[in-house]
Length: 429
Image (cartoon, rainbow, N blue to C red; front, side, top):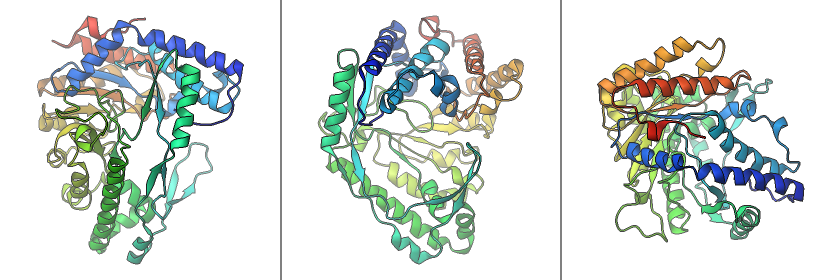
């Protein structure tokens, strides 16, 4: 939710309210409640019907380009973009994405930071890559790291709520949320400071240095979570809150019995972690330098997810040692057959199809065969499958490719034995 404070003109206000009314109409369709129930069954591991979710991410600038926005003010344009993206979902995609009648306001949480900032070498290309510029060069540099101290700016939180209520309160449900997406990225955090190649060398040449860094960051996140708990800044995420590296939090298992609505705890929530930077290290090193610390951070949570773009083919057994693991990412680089055999129905098989299929020549037959293969092997192994098409940084200004990919996926899902459920799966307008 955009939080800028510049004045919203009457003209922009009219545009935003009209879009909000359209969103409310979409959210009221019966299909939304049907999808909510289906996601709940899915996340409870009580359904074998594969779920489909498109997450255009970087491609949104091509699907809903800036020049298509009609508002003039910057805050209004941010709001307009958010509304138009939700409406675009409904108008174009036949996936299982849910459109909610809510406008979420985030609590204004202020952090002191970690005491040291990452630096980068940036590409001259508009969307080019960046290179590490290490700021930690020797073990004593770890002393620069400080545990974050946080507090809520209650005045700013109140301002955000008042603005939203005045703008949308009679159309949408205004929802105040604190920290709801909890995900730990220890290796990403440290390699940004130390450099990726340097961390790889430290694993061999000075492993204790790396352990000291991981211990420090882990303790820092414990300190951060304690503050969230003590200041009552956590919010439930058993809803459409984005979870792990794709998926949502709908489940009948949360919050657990004895929940105090006035005080959310980690044991009432989903948590997640990943270590993409360790994609090429052995399972043993992944365990030693990352998973042992991540497992510690995830232990208090009721349900957990693990992984992102790293290939976990040979590390699934290790991931399954995480307490309350419910979702595991199967990246575009993973061996889907071996992963299906290892995972079975122990956790959600959160498959990330390769986004490169949306660039170059779109080969419908290739995409269909690719999706069908994963459907076949996961069905044969009793997996609880979700297809999350993400990391789509461009569709080469061919938005219809998303529509076509989604239609192919929907057709393949409904061709499968026992998967067809026309009442709950077909897209309706």
